[in-house]
Image (cartoon, rainbow, N blue to C red; front, side, top):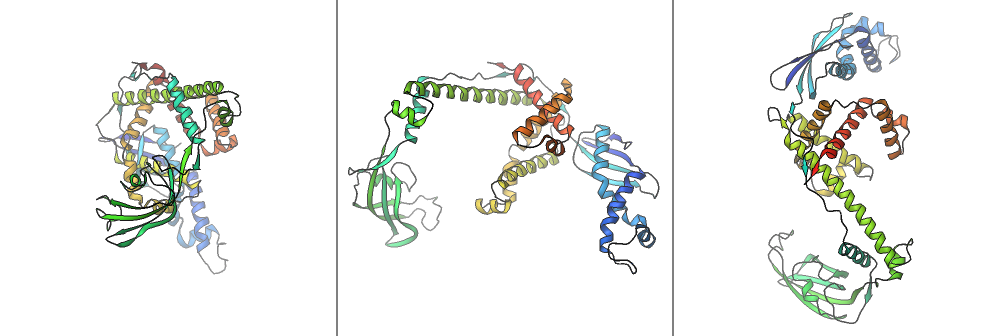
Length: 429
């Protein structure tokens, strides 16, 4: 035990005074010595083989105290915080009150505390009702999208129209001077897509294969290439091919092509309707959850009306770390990400700062409700969560246990339970 005592200070400040027994810091001294001895050469001993007692005679045991403290501090401080139940945030400022040889060390930690939450209504909050019905128009729209996905481009001799794709060569110039990036050969352009400079695609409507067209456009004032912004340009365009999109007929054959499990268009329609119904139900459930939790958070108040900057910063870095962990699986490092996006760490930090205060308040409110409802997950619930995570991530249950402490698992389960409670009690209006 750390024999920890918490003393509340002004505002969101406080102090934790705790002890470190001799047998605990002795392990830290051993660990510190095992590192430092590798760097010391002493006559009569091979490098790294100096006995501890010889080191103590030459340099004193006290020379290892700071390193020893650094080794054990995360564990002993964490135990002290847990023992007091103080809701600390950020990094503590640790000071030694006494670190005498052979005696229990006494340390103090100046800490910052999470703000208190004054809960408002969180049961029976009103949320907007969601329409989960699926209409025939919804089904028809989805089938039309599926048709577009199965469409093919076929060569035609007719004049190009909006929606057709033209294969072109083009060469652009401003005042007769050709500019970099203004040329391409055999470029496929869908007319009406809006992917080119405004006015470009419209002037190719009506063109046929082998036509040559001078396309005159004016670059937008905010064009990315500053030397072209606002200037008039002429593109010499040669049309090689005109292709139109051939959409398959909506019949039984189409149904079998897009879904091997059906035989008729009627069956496909029923299957599409069922899938859309599931999607709408899932979206409605998520919307209800978001709205209910948001209402509970809105109804709560942060005592003092201020969330510590350290909590905001911690949330931002957690979001960034999660993003980069996901990208790392795709082989993208933070350095590569910044290079690809043309951004910096500061830019990303500012991006995640937006919404950080809301995320932190949401977590604080949910944790306050856990406390108010006295939710304490059982060993069976923790075991079930471990099993669920192991299956979801294809891991051994022991590996999950090693990666996540029971406290972390219990916290997550409790938060989920609170969200379920808020949603279950919510009233659709």
